[in-house]
Each structure stands twice: as structure tokens, then as C-alpha cells.
Amino acid sequence: MEAQKKPVDVGASNPAQEIYYRQNITKEQIVSMLEAVLMCCGEDVLSLEPQYDQRGELETVAVTFLGGGVRYANVYADSHLSLCRDVLNQAFK
Image (cartoon, rainbow, N blue to C red; front, side):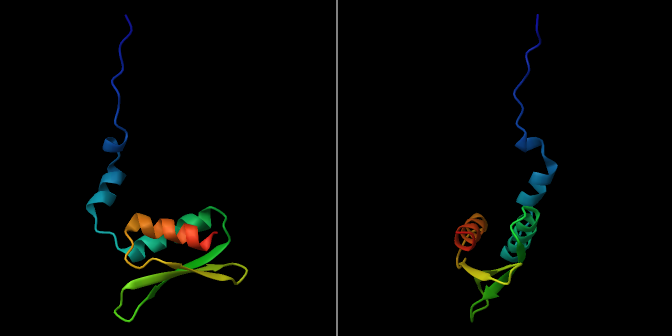
């Protein structure tokens, strides 16, 4: 008789994932992590720079490319996931 395998919830057993959910990650940290990801993807990204409005709130992210070009992504009032999505959609269109 074959032993039946129980389904495994991979996400629940990942301690690194639990750490991220417990920490308060800022939008600036998200921008920094997204910058590292884009550099690893070979997208010729030189930097991602957060830019703030007069009240000190994150308004846009400037994406600077190795060739010197700059594109801006409006991320005002975005959640963390929306921030990533908006930078990718607006800077890499």
C-alpha cells in the first residue's frame, strides 16, 4: 500500500516570508528593493530615486537608465504592490 502524501502549504513554512509580513516596510525600502531587482534583470537601470511633494510624501519615482534617459512614475497614494506595478508600467512602456 502506498503512503499518501499530505498537501504542503509552502508559504506557511517559509520563515523569510513571515518576517516580511511582520515588519513595517516603508515605500522607500520598496523602491530600493525594486531597484535591486531591476538591476538583476538586466534592464539597464542605473537608479530608482524617490521624489517627494511639498508635504514630504512620496510622489514620483525617477528611473534613470544607463544611457542617461530618465522616466518618471507617479506613485502618489500607492500601496506597496501598486508602487511596483506603476513603476514597471510607466517606466518600461
